[in-house]
Length: 217
Image 1 (cartoon, helix red, strand yellow):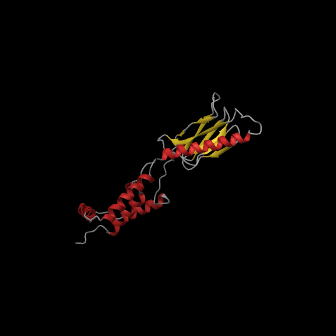
Image 2 (cartoon, one colour):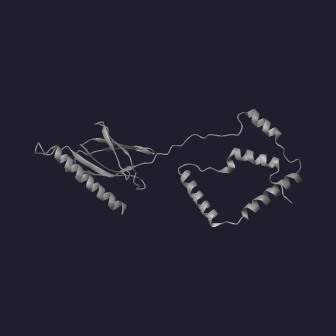
Image 3 (cartoon, rainbow, N blue to C red):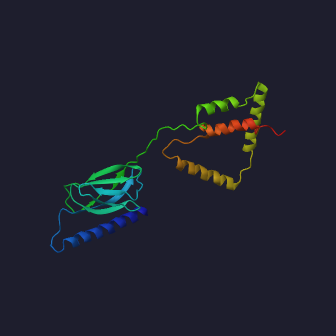
């Protein structure tokens, strides 16, 4: 249905521009053979339409913009160089052939996505090495194997209680929505894992010092 609407829109745009070009040369009684109507749809490599793409005729310093569905139609001349640009995509050049025998030139434009990879940034909960050293020294660790075992058992009990929680339809719906949001948020980049978060580790050690994982029994 969408492709049918796009085709109808292109036909209407083509008719309008052809009428406009004819009107420009009606007084002279002849049509300029150098004027060509260039129209089409801008897509990515997955054939999804890209809207609001900037279009510039480089050798004439003028241009236009595709609509929200990626449709475009404007007047060009043979050998014109057209630049298509959009955020998130590599600039695409298209040259109008000089061997056309008609004043209509329909052609779809395909743009390649451009992914920016940022340098790794390491975030620590301490401003200086001295602060890290002081926190590390002040950290209270179990002094024997029995204490370490008791803390591990308390942690396992807490995890078992969390896993035994009864799921409700509302909780399941929120979980599915959160998973879909995470997939969209991290699309094209490496996902975030809490286990590598130094702030979460600092909170974990603070919880150990407070005894949050001790058994209530």
